Image 1: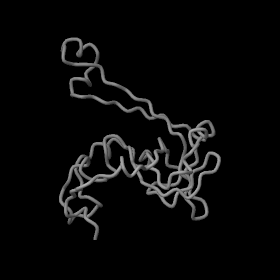
Image 2: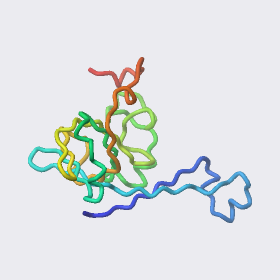
Image 3: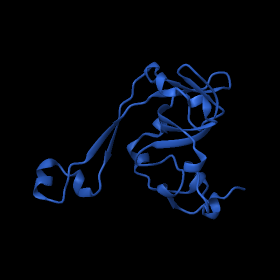
Length: 169
């Protein structure tokens, strides 16, 4: 399995991105936090099936997952990872120019500063280190960062409001 190393830098203010010598001159500047995220597996799509194949060392973490009907799969938009695409902060949702210009944090755009994606998937089967799901909006070979069971009481909201362009048609 090919190993990817993702480093996420989180800064609360532009001052946090300053070099240490400049940051020392500004007491409000703090060191940026760096997070190392490693994939636990990859998406595979053989023979019209959709599989989340985990590295064998993560197989024990699947114990009990077969009791859940749905999972949230956290994955990395690796096919979209360029500095130019990460810098895009406003888009026309769904690539439709008829939709209003919208910030990437107010839509599901694949263009984002941190290329973290989330898909809700129906579990078909769990066998060994493989979770078969009905479908996922990720490509073959996409790195998977995490899998979480979907819990309706915790993962759903009441009185949901969405913009007109996001309503079901």
